[in-house]
Length: 130
Image 1 (cartoon, rainbow, N blue to C red):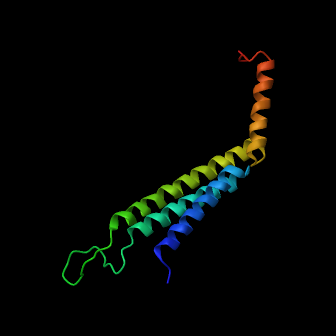
Image 2: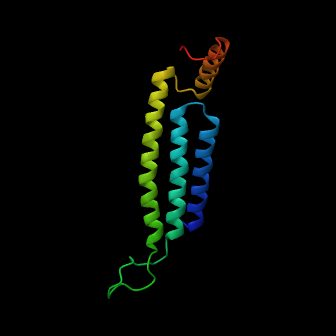
Image 3: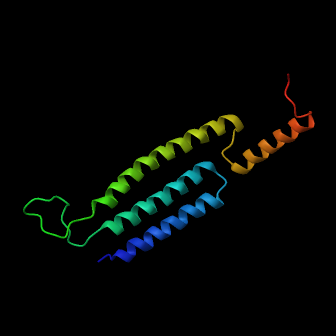
C-alpha cells in the first residue's frame, strides 16, 4: 500500500531534481526540462493534499455519501498545467531565438558572447552610428 508520505517524498525528490537541473546545467533545454520537473512536483503535491481517503465526487445529489473530495486542488492543478504548458512553450521559443542568434544552447557561451559584444561596443566609443 502506498501511503501519502510516499507521494510527498516523491514530490520533494522531483522538486529537488528539477531545481538541481535548472541551477547546475548550462544547457537551456535541460534547464527547461528541470523547470518541468519542478512543476510536476508541485502538481503531485497539490493532488496529494487534495486527496481524501474514501471520498466521493463533490456532487451534491442523493446517493453520494460524505466525505466529498476537495475539488479546489484539482482545479488549481488543471490551471497550473495550462500555465505550465504556456510557460514551456515560451521558454522553448526564446531558446530557439537564442540559438538562432548565438548558435549555441550553452548559457555560459551566450553570456560570454554578450559580454564580448559589450566590450567591443564600449571600445569603439559606445555611441550610436548616427
